Amino acid sequence: MARLLSAMKKLTREVNDQEICRRLEILINSEKEDLPPSSVKSLLEEPGDFDPSTVSEPYTQYVKHYLYMVKREERNREKQRQETESRKQARATKKRPSASTKKSSKKSPPSASAKKKAASGRAKRAGTS
Image (spheres, one colour):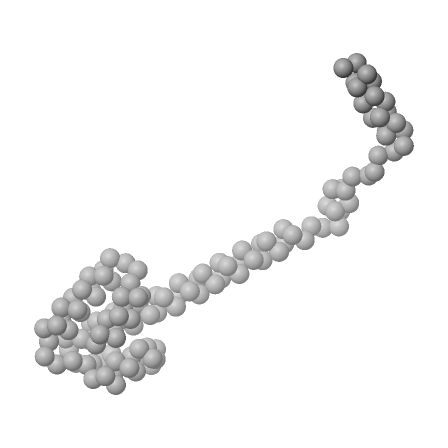
């Protein structure tokens, strides 16, 4: 049962999860009968295939809540994965500008006369200082 409690604490995301873990801990310390280790093992290894009705009564609600927590965690991971994927796609489209954008963003090199004008302007400023 300690393994189940530990797994539940790792999946805790909400206040009611903490409260349920606290109550399970109290139940574990006060209850004479425990869940069979084989049931706990199958619950932790393959929660999707586990039937909560096979668990004795004081633990049924905790097992059901654990299964809920596992499903919630899977949904959250899937949602995060999709958000990450959409962000990557958005970045990729920003990095690939169209051909017309590339041409307009390039500056043409200055002409020879523009270079001479700039040089004479610098020379005049240097001479007046």
